[in-house]
Structures are given as structure tokens and as C-alpha cells.
Length: 421
Ligand code: LLP
Image (cartoon, rainbow, N blue to C red; front, top):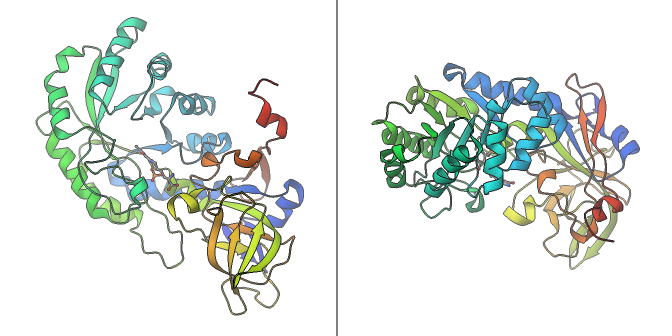
């Protein structure tokens, strides 16, 4: 979706003060472009909405772990939510202090646990009874300091979101039941190296109502009420983003208004990912061919499910707009004169569709188009399928004036570099 940073000026799409055409003239397509200004604005908006709780914001780096993005969020005071040793390593490289990392994950390996302990991460979000034993024993073996544990609670609340990104229902692999948490807390003495001082929950991503979150937080608070040493509540991520102009989503403020009265007096942690970076990013491609077949129009582009898999995987919607509006449609991308076209990629899969029935003007081969709201779960989920080099990532500076290739385009050699030749 268009916003204050991703906007048309005189019929040309801009990322802040930089014309997208200027970037692609130098870098080519496909390319991810991010507005640092927008990402930092989103971070501030979340902070402002939840100000009464003064929460620690741990950016969920799985959404977009580009170092330039991580560095600026960290410099603006964000901690990091990491789900693998690789993400911890990257976050440390980007300058976060280890105590500001929460290490989550349903299947942490012994090596990852050892690495996280060596680095002295601030919190382990624990999802398994056996994981407590592993961490406790690894601390003894490595003579590490005691670790802070937030037990991840599965509140058995069904979030109103896509089933693939819903995590808080009873059948999900995530979290611990109330019973398991009570059991662990009753056995605390068995884990002398662990400090059970937090509770964690995350019921899903792209949450469409505040009520499921309220129920989940309420259940978590009831669960920890008998344990006065648990004063930290990590309420996870999930703040939603509008992908369509008419999409109704609860605002950050409405989540904050619902949760603040419950959480006053606790130390609160948040793990937003999508809400910080999704609408700060776009993926730009170029139309290669126009095909009319079976009563349909296909714009076959140089961008595919290998670069952005959200549409094939979750049936997700991303607005697709021309980078340069035709003169007859100077201001309205979805105006009269548009056709309904399928925007597809070159990958050998019928599911390689980036948008179905997208209203677009007549575009010729060579015309660039932008897939919007693609900053989160875009590049991080990209693959080399069909031996496609992953695209470069361009970051437009916080003042909106200049841009930089934060990550170059992969080469064929990059794709071969881990293999025996
Ligand atoms: N915390 C935990 C424990 C999580 O599992 C997640 C996301 C987050 C925080 C960040 O959630 P967010 O604020 O971004 O909603 N690939 C999917 C989304 C997967 C989300 C996984 N967990 C997509 O493209 O929609």
C-alpha cells in the first residue's frame, strides 16, 4: 500500500525523496527497496501507542534481517527477538547488546543453546520442559551465569488470522500448556541455573482483532498470579499491517488501550516484526512479456515466488502498481482504463503468481512495476529456486534523500559457493 514514504510524485513512484526509476536504472530489477524513515516511524508509533507501559521493544528479526535495517532499529533503541543462533549472530554484528536479545524458538538445538549462553543473551523464551533441562545442564557444563527464562504459554486461544501464522491454539506446536507451566514452576528447584521470571506468549501474526490477544494476556496473568517472582510479560508480535487500501485492522493504539490496563506494573516486552518493516518495503520488477491466453492477460515479470513467496504460500495480497503511471492516469493507479491482469513470474510452477486480477494500465515489456508492503517476510523467505540469484536490497536513508545498496545482487558464483565443484 502507498503511504507517506511510498508515494507517487508527478506520476512516478518514490521511496521518500528518491525516484524508484533512479534506483532501478543503476541496480536493475528485481530489487527490494526499503524506507528507513518509514521503519523508524513505525517503531516510534508502536512506542508512542504503548508509552504507558514503557515496553522493551524487541524487533523480530525474522521479518527482515538486513544488517542496515537491524543497525538503525538497534541504534533507535530496539532490542532483538531472534529465533536461531544465526539470527543472534547477525543481531550482535548489527550492534545489539546481548542482554537486549530474546532467544525464542520451538526447537533450539544444543549448539544454539550453548552459543546463546556464551553470548549471554538476555532471555530464553522456552517452549519445552526438556529445554529447561538442556539449558540448565549447559550452564553447569559451560560454567555460565544463570539464565532468565520466559516460559512460552500456549493460551489455547485461536487468533483471527491465516491458519499458517496462527500459533496460540491448542493444536499448534508452539508454547507450553498451563498445566506444563505449573508443573515446571513447581519443580523449579530441579533447575538451579534457571531464573523463572517471565512469561511469554505470541498467538499469531497479522492479528485482526484485539480480543483474542486480551484473552490470551488475561489467561497468562491468571496463570502467573501465584508466582510473584514472575514480573515480566512478553506479549510477542502480531501487530497487523494493512495490505489493501480498504483493509480494516485494529490500530496500535487499540491494542495498547486493550492491554495497558491489564499489564500496568509489569515489565512488558513486545516482539513486533511485520508492523515495523512491512509497509517500509517494496519489491520492484520489470514486465518481460504480455501474454493474452484463455481469456486472460498475463504480465510475465522478472520477479517471482522465489523472491516473494507470500502470495503462493498464504494467498496473501500485495498491491501491485506501475512505477511510472501512464499520462492518461496521472494520479490514480487503480483508475479507469486499467485492465485486470495476472502478474506472474518466470518460475516453473503454476503457483508462481504475485497477483491475480490486478487492475493495471496497459504496460509494455520493459515497464517496471512495484509490489507493495513487501518489507516483511519478503527477502528473508526468498530462495534460489530455479537457480535465481536473490535480489539486492536498497535502503533509502532516514532523511529520505540518499540511497545505498545494503546487500548486492547474488551472483551465480554465490549460489555455487557452498558446493564442491
Ligand atoms: N514473536 C514470535 C514468537 C513469533 O513467532 C513471531 C512471528 C513474531 C514475534 C513476529 O510477529 P509479527 O510482529 O511479524 O507478526 N511468514 C509469515 C509470518 C510468520 C510469522 C512468524 N512468527 C508471513 O509472511 O505472513
